[in-house]
Amino acid sequence: MSELKIALDEAAGEGIISSSQAERLLPYLTGKDIGALSVDRGLSAPRSLDESNPVEDTEAPRFVRGFHDVLITIGVIVLLVGLWGVANRYLSLLAIVILAEILVRRQRLALPAVDLTVALVAWVFHTVVTYVGSTPALGNNFTIGAIVIAAPFPLSLALFYWRYRVPLSLALFLFSLFGLFLAAVFYVAGTVTGSTNVPADYPIQTLMILLVTALASFALAMRFDLSDPQRVTRRSDVAFWLHLATAPALLYSTVLLALRLELASGGTVFNNLTDVPFGSYLQAVTVLVVVLAMMLIGLVIDRRAFVTAGLVSLGLATAALLTHSNAGFDKIGFLVLIIVGLVVLVIGIGWADLRRLIVRHLPSGMQARLPALR
Image (cartoon, rainbow, N blue to C red; front, side):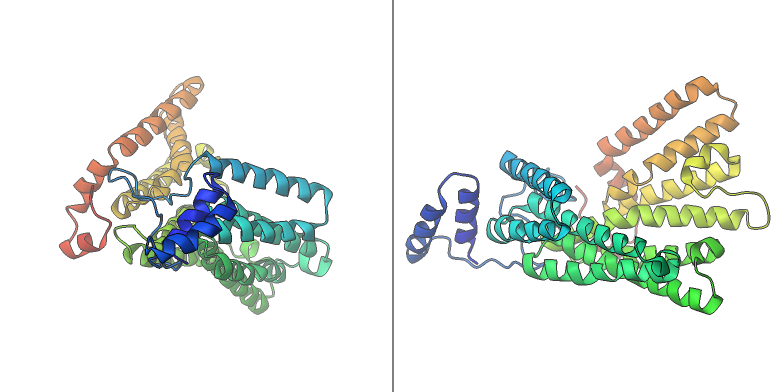
């Protein structure tokens, strides 16, 4: 597909010209050698045909080119929700495919592409969970049920990416492979141990497996990241989505494993991070150290997902520390909001300066592979 055809399709999609006018203009302008350069739709293709602003954040995908994209996305959401409520679920799947053909493959609208990818994942998840829930042999056995739930995602997302080349679908496909791997590991572990619910029966071993998988996902995301340090191709978009999913997985698996190992010899460790304020002083410090380490990693690799993923845990750990410091209970909530808000503002406003301060102390070889300092 030529750059000219893409531009004409986008102009038609935004109502600047009609579709018939776009079809007539293409051969006319092509005959005059205007805009006839080919455009790669693979991962090495430019992230956007628009010129990027030199001071613009290059981390997140640029998937909104105007209110037209937002309007179309709202229409897609409303239509799919309506179909979901009144029609057969397979009609919703048909609608997703038809809309993807029009909005993604033909008009190349990025925000609706994200919306339709999420809709496909939601449809597959609802379908398989409904099936597992209605089958007692699967619903009562975690190890088998997990495999049945995870199995359809890689194939459906691979087909969606093959057809529409949406970076989010590739990232979710890769992430679904990790999910299927986890399900297979739990199935094997359950077969060996005779357990039907490995996570509940072997919590420490489960957290170790989750941490290793999260580290593998992080390594894969960094592979995409380091292959495009200037963040000008779709590889960076794939890395963005992978980091967005990996950051909380890495954070919580690390925190919960550290706390489990910390109190393995005695005491009670919370299973849910919302219980942090009711834990010990040492537990709160452990959470705080892990969160700060994650934020440091985010600064080094220039990915804010590692900062935002830890904000809730930062607030809960701060509340625990204030509680153990005998601060007035009625003021703790407000103090936590002030502290977390200041952390967000300091990191957000001083992001580039903080990166320079940290990255310049790293080995020169590592600096050369990281995203450029701005």
